[in-house]
Image (cartoon, rainbow, N blue to C red; front, top):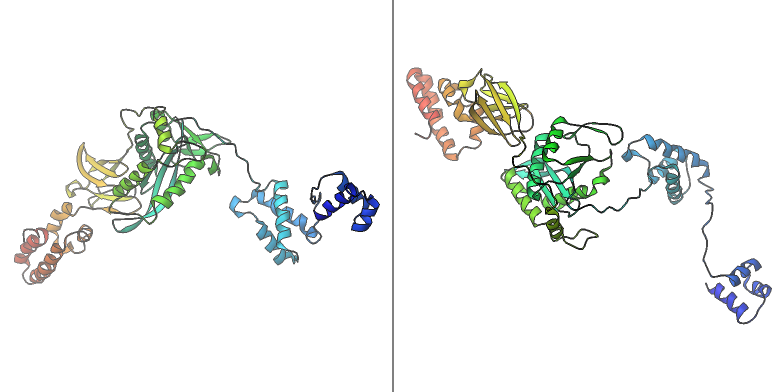
Length: 441
């Protein structure tokens, strides 16, 4: 800049010739002419960047980037990885900066991992919502549990709903929708999903989807349209993707503790209700203000909820349990061998025999778990007292029964068993009374 000012001043103010200025400054005469004629524009970029050290490897780098087109998105070459491969496999002696500059331009030229452009959208009031699942850890009843949480977010107002479940099966998926619609006070006309198996049976070419039959019935009952993102295109529902991370870092840090899943959900519900003073980027009104506008545009919730249950028929096995969804649930021992019908809800199981309800349980998730009630086995243990200590229902009961029963067992059961060996007939009756009617003692 100093040379530019000197040349122009010498020529225009002091009238020096171009030849004289060139001799004084050492610049070429053509350079002096450019300075005199135009504004200072600094140094221009090269039209073609030479790579004297890297040039023997350019074709190899291009071949690696071309092969990335068929590789998984998260297993493609980065510029750093290419540099390390060149050094380790090809003996490259150049610098990493040179490699990074070339790879950045080559990816754009070859169409590999180039940055995408997005169109700013303005969603209509009360028309669209986005839904997705996330995962987190919580302490339920003193035990660590890996939970799934459902998220639904209004695209217009940003109001959201979050609820925890032990699984993300279809029955939980439907239950979460019904509770979310109740929370929002209506049904959105369109709900946007990724290609989750609870809704999509098969992904077809392009935008085509073969939906699960039960999901078609569900959104047909609530009269909303399901729209699905392209495969591996989570940004198409970026609002709820962000909500999953927001919920995990705000509602689940530190790790939440509760005595039951229902208690945890009540806490998260309060958090969702309190979220409203925040302003979404680009909007002047708060979330709650926008949500108040939105309520009037939602579809009405049907007067009767969707029948979100599963019906299964089974047979009571000799252990007085019914196997449902790979888990065992007790029924009274008098029904062993009977065929029964079970109704499975999202959080409960009811067992019926010829229309008569014979058992109700909280639903188990997982495999090979037992839901037992020791009361139903007392009559059988009365006949077989030797199985008392090793009986699974009693072992499960002992984990929860009060300390007074444990002390009673320690004091009464062992002496009775010793006496039982001495006088089988007489003490047998005493054992039955003490063991199976401890509260009487």
